[in-house]
Image (cartoon, rainbow, N blue to C red; front, side, top):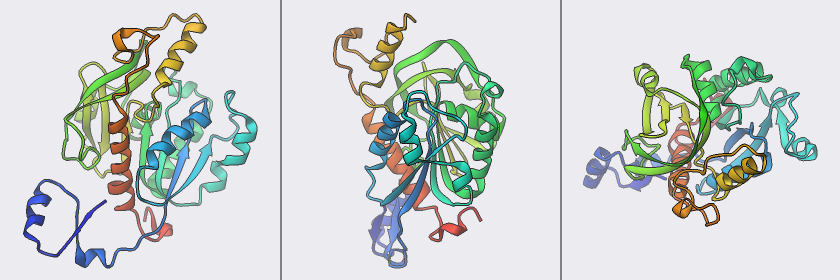
Length: 306
């Protein structure tokens, strides 16, 4: 949250140069506050688990958040009870006239497929287009980031036969960008994907900015220069056992998976995984809510996108 300081306080000039978020008293007294309305399109198979992951991150903000869940119409998840979906999720046709302060579109286990092969690709395209005029800021996660980069900016994905699987070290390229503010120059994040985006495509695009990458995992975090869209090519929301459960599931299915890198002590699956990414995930989502949702959205929801 911003520092509310007296107008013209000398320290303010120094802190402003460091990109510390300041709010003069003259502005603070006129600031209106209301709940932030966040919509999540959940494309993951285990929807209840994914809901928990993201709500855990969103709960770290002092902001009051009203959270809604969206699912693709005419698509039934095999891993979530239909009663749960019918009770807690809404269809796009029900909410498309609403305005939202923030939107999260989750990943999906579809990295090996071309976008046109996916049955709900037309509706996902419609939702991504709708977000441009009905949402203040959108966070695209993993596969959704690949999909949005292609649909919105024409950036192709590459597909690898071997899955990128584990916890990887990343570097902050734009350390003073508000999304990474307060974070370390070097941080860790989980990955579980076959799809990727070449950094050169992001760096060459006039409307996009690469914020963080990894020597081994490649491009990780990038944003539109108007800061209305953020693309996270990883899973900072994962809980400590997500990769372990995925590894054991594939092992039981006879897929012969690789042991997730930098995850188990001594690379031994019988040991408790080491959590290296929690602080990065919490900070990134708190910064997103503060700087790009709460501080940017219109006080009157009906004026969002105008």
